[in-house]
Image (cartoon, rainbow, N blue to C red; front, side, top):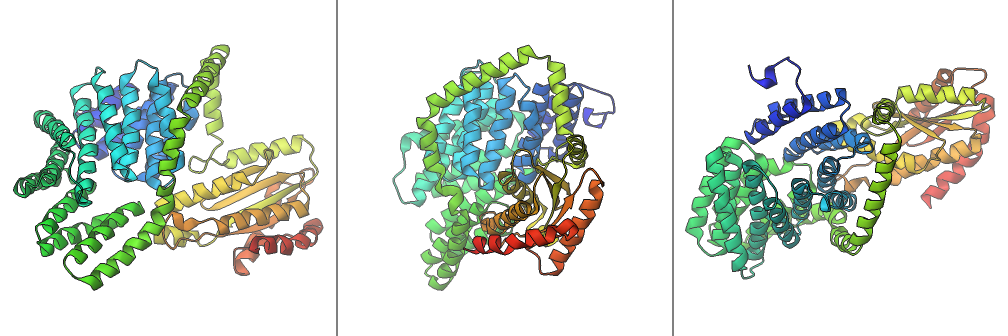
Length: 572
């Protein structure tokens, strides 16, 4: 019986090693199960470093399959453990994947900040493999946002770091493959722009991929064999050897069929189409692109559609089909608008981070020393248990409080002998339609974004809670009706005015809010929640995207006096 099928208890490290082996063998589903077992075993053992290593593997498995929402959840779940872990490599490993996921989702600025924090954590440590992972995450992020020259330079740097480590054969295979891919893609893009090749870079990438082929044959690694042949084909095409390029693409497709990797299949399809277009075989080029179109639409990121429509528009123009070229160029433009803001700040952010690198390193060193001092002054077991207790009060998706936190907060309100507390019951309008139309992954990101918007508009003593699904509640202690309605309107306007189309085209999100007042000395909070729920029902009946206050204790009369003013301010 294999370890994956065994019910016998084992250590987190043993499960993690198995997950790595299964991933290398392209047994994705089994690798996920092993990584989850590694995470559970680490939590049970109260080992923060092992929790982070398992979380990194889980997030990376999801990320490599484009399951971005699941990858993000794995990183968010690991966040409390980073505060109590004293292993920089473990922390940096989670940060590097977390940053890459955010870049892929479109939050380039935050993603690059997190990746650079991972590089800083590992820069001065003897753990070269941890530094390689962080540098590789940066190279992949640059590759993902289309900065191929920077990606190539970063790929070279990451491989140099790896060669200074005691990496095993599989990591060396991956390191050579990533470095070769970044360099070859930069040369392929240069060819598409009709610029002369950098022959030194071509020779360097060819040497790297020939090494990949030698290493991959020994391990029977179909993915790396396919990728190597794909980019060796690109390099041959760059040098004008179309026959050799076609031979490499054929081999790449053969190995890709064994891996059933859709991302790799799409990449090969683009370069085969480029080769056919360059030789004047427009019909064949069109067939290659049409073949990968369903796979392109299955991906979450709009930039993949940008690349596809650009390729189709250029192909039809080269073939002289100007009407078709125009239609595809319009689609390319639409997707570019969606993707523009995600990409616009990337280069500026890279320059800013480079200028601030020394300052950030000093700040990180001081922060690390403070954390180490704090850890020495407190017993590890107490800190870990407190972190777990805090996690139990949080909703894992949004980071808001859960029902346990609500009960604990209400008890604190009662003990403080507070006389009044405003209750805001918030429900996202037509949320099921969002899930059905745009996918549950998009729905999760909408909830995360709404939670961020909600927290940004609240004060420290306010209590935001996710009751479940798309229903949220906010308790505002010692808040009079006028201030409560103003805050509710601010929340509502913040959600409706947010630029949701940056996430996906045609997405719009609004919320409805019911308000009531809770008097802790004389009633249970459930009674106030029921009144707020009745008001929420009225808000839905009246057309949604509005706030309705309960008439208890004159609440609605006082609150209504400011509702119109706040709404008009929002329109202005």
